[in-house]
Image 1 (cartoon, protein in one colour):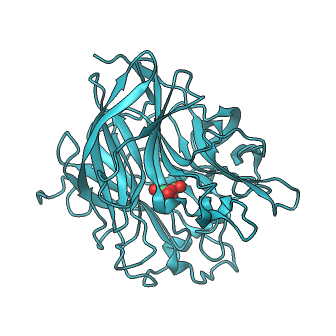
Image 2 (image 1 turned 90 degrees about the vertical axis):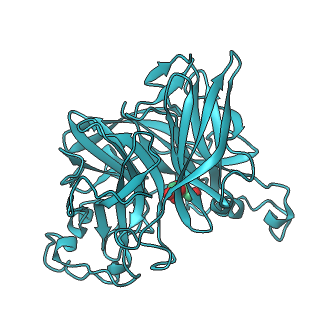
Image 3 (image 1 turned 180 degrees about the vertical axis):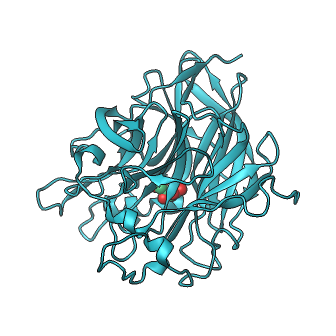
Amino acid sequence: MKSTPSKFGKTPHQPSLWTRADALKVHADDPTTTQPLVSANFPVLSDEVFIWDTMPLRDIDGNITSVDGWSVIFTLTADRHPNDPQYLDQNGNYDVIRDWNDRHGRAKMYYWFSRTGKDWKLGGRVMAEGVSPTVREWAGTPILLNEQGEVDLYYTAVTPGATIVKVRGRVVTTEHGVSLVGFEKVKPLFEADGKMYQTEAQNAFWGFRDPWPFRDPKDGKLYMLFEGNVAGERGSHKVGKAEIGDVPPGYEDVGNSRFQTACVGIAVARDEDGDDWEMLPPLLTAVGVNDQTERPHFVFQDGKYYLFTISHTFTYADGVTGPDGVYGFVADSLFGPYVPLNGSGLVLGNPSSQPFQTYSHCVMPNGLVTSFIDSVPTDHTGTQIRIGGTEAPTVGIKIKGQQTFVVAEYDYGYIPPMLDVTLK
Ligand code: FRU
């Protein structure tokens, strides 16, 4: 890697803070920021595989793109094991919950295609076995590069380590469907550095993943968002006045919140092809608030930068909480300062009666939000659940200034294209 100094100088920007005071404003079950109840009678995409994180094909500006009239999505995917003795319980019944909970360790990138933006047909694995350098193929972003159908898939190569990588291939269409060709040479891009972004050596529970490249609509340069944790040994972080924010009397105690250190990372490309990247300080940190800000992504609207990221109840710090779902922040320029949407950051959370119904929301520039079904209760006590591993109903939100509103619900896995590219 070249060591050209950053064009931004020594201190390019100060990360914006998601503070404990902001998070105290999070309220579950506000209908304007709560995903409608998902019925336990949902259809499943496939009896053979579980799917979770969904990554629609898009262009570098963020527009969801179909090719020759075919929509394409990539998904993290794992085989279901209904007949594998390893997943039978003492009574010989399939333990689907255990199978589902183990999925991250065998995640592979698959693709699906559709003429209607729903009713997805399975295309298969994106990379053949042995192409990806690690055991797990974790989330990222497929970018359609041109009218030749070339696609750069940025994703996370995990176990051992966690490396942001990319692999180039091509989408080929016929009257009957879509296939992906190429995707044979994986190029490592970068890993956590231990100075801005926490490494595995600093914290065995570190996060470094989920690349989301984009072109800044204002300066025209190529950047990439990703999930990280703030660098430093686990337990060494300080939750001071700035991280706490303006809290009411009695809310100053931060407990053990120094262990929660999520951030949204950003890197800038030194070349037009996105082969050579320089990490910059995080855009947003959540030290003392939350340990995971996953799958960060942007919607560029009304000259503003709407930054979205998904997070969990279980990753919140002592003394603050919120539902599983997607959170958002807005700024007038790429490097901030970012302000939490709706005061708190919460944009679309699960209802408290079904806290795990969906996850891994992706807000698209048309205001549609896709996610997957995790588990839905099948009885009133919530002790019986049905595992999803399939697409959730799409939700429509309206983004207005510093506020968002749930305004619509659509079909399961509805991801319509915003533009169509005719391949040459
Ligand atoms: C979100 C996520 C991503 C990660 C993947 C692992 O659901 O945790 O951050 O890449 O799932 O399965």
